Image (cartoon, rainbow, N blue to C red; front, side):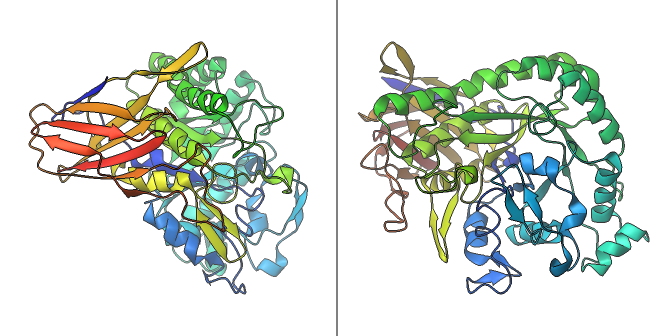
Length: 490
């Protein structure tokens, strides 16, 4: 029997809304042919940015957007992306397929996108091939309100008032594509760059150091020991995948691969616990946030597509995995300040896929929409006893759950049934709660690999859920197999 007790008057911390962040890199068709179609496109747009994508992302309350990369960031020179588009240089995107980057989507276009989305920009600066002065000048160009050459250049390019910038990444994956540095070397470089990363309007800049990947605990140890005083955040990257070489297809998999991928997702809890323990030794007050600014699934590209464009489909399995991962982030909200799923459009675990003027919403998008009420809410202490879901000699919990209370007192309970074969009966106890009503939605499909396509764009979408029965302060829930359920208790 699966049992859950929710302490509705408790407070386990605040789920930072930035945990629900996103990531858009100059990679494949994420920016070009995705977000950006240009002002002259027949596809409806506002100053070159697709209207339908903006509308879709606004609906999930996107809190922040990371740009321009990724590996692309440490090859990006911001001056190439300002001024008249016809004068912007064209150069090779050597990280992602050696395609020509025309720089039509640059600083002003990105800030316009964030304004249309109503989200905060998170800009990642160039350490790998850039200079300290280049990064410092970009910040002055963006944020200085006074009379300087860079501020006046911004005005000449169409933006009179400075932009408000909070989140600033100092390099990306500097252990790899961002320079192949040792932790000790990058720690010194980070301190040098961070010294000159100032917000020129005297507001606080949240500087994010390029952190480790996966289980590289040595990197975290060195960065926290040597540079914690000059950072506000430390990034972490972790992707859930079956195997790195010869990656598995996104839509063709058996139950053993369903199980393995979800087990990989649950390993996020171990990774966060270990990195947080190191950070706690140097930062017991938890001033420095852990920024999981790349996470999600990584499958083989779709057949017939450019292997460097990382275009993959997105099934019910990806949605369940994302729900489980966000529950893990909730449980670490004392340290995890932000997270960014990779990536927003047409790349990896995307929210949206496009073909010309057509757009579809993925199962992962729908899961984010169902969970959006957790953003900024109070995490409620929760005790879960779950049956096992076994595969071979291994087992993982069959049920994952999280609950939060918003400012109006409503409780959002989200639950995932990881078992693809059978429903899960869940007995939920809410001691002392005065709950009078429960409404819900469920996301599931006929098969483990249920997917939305351009021919059938609504095959996987939330529908009303009638499997919850309220009896005083107790709730009986029957979760369908392989499902994500969101319940609002009022």
